[in-house]
Length: 318
Image 1 (tube, rainbow, N blue to C red):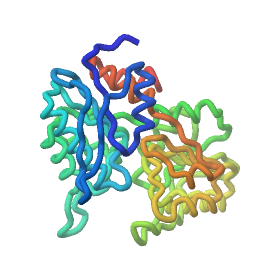
Image 2 (image 1 turned 90 degrees about the horizontal axis):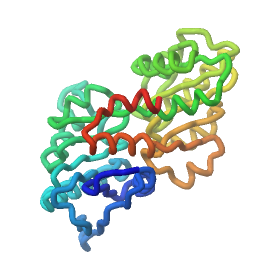
Image 3 (image 1 turned 90 degrees about the vertical axis):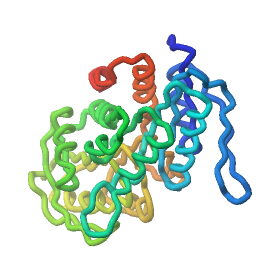
């Protein structure tokens, strides 16, 4: 695959395996950089390749530890800017703080906007992200954003499974649009679960709009955080006579009690992508499958570098 020598891809410490897979797809070496810390914990980064006048991409998921990875991304971008890179794209497969996107009560921050400002101020010229939790987050950035969808990878996986008698269930009302898209793509029926939230990690699914009796269920979301929503919804559809239950999510955050809940829930298979690296504990669970977004990111990076349309990617990989 011919690419201009001016293209450089660097990786932060959050997900080096994904960055390596992207570079392998593009048939280019990963850019050299040393990431370390001073004795007091301050991050220090040194770029080992010449980036003057080059088109640079730095890959970093702002996953746990979120603040550490975010600061590392900001330092990386600043380092590239001061080394005279001609263009810097922050590739953020998983964008932390995305759920703090509005003031739903008094005296709370809109942290997603704050982080967007920090990335632009550090010197990023554009952002490449996957499933930002809400499409309007693109407007939080004052620089161009290329927004990819995990459905390109997850949808192709589920289509290959050829699930019979399929009903796509939205695990909550806010996810209806995504569920409808999967239902159309996979020729399935659509149902919606109504839930009540008691806290950030405690929810209860109490009603279903639609028929799941004797159907195979697919629940898709952008994030599985503590898994309270999908596990509660899975128990409800099983009580209503569903057969197999599949869960797909772009970002497998799997925080707190998530793994324990997924292990006990009546879920046949959980499918996530590698936007966030999974722990050994998660890999040991027999019902978790991890798909790679490397090809999708690699194609998007190639198109951005060549100043070509990224939108056409949805037709070619979908």
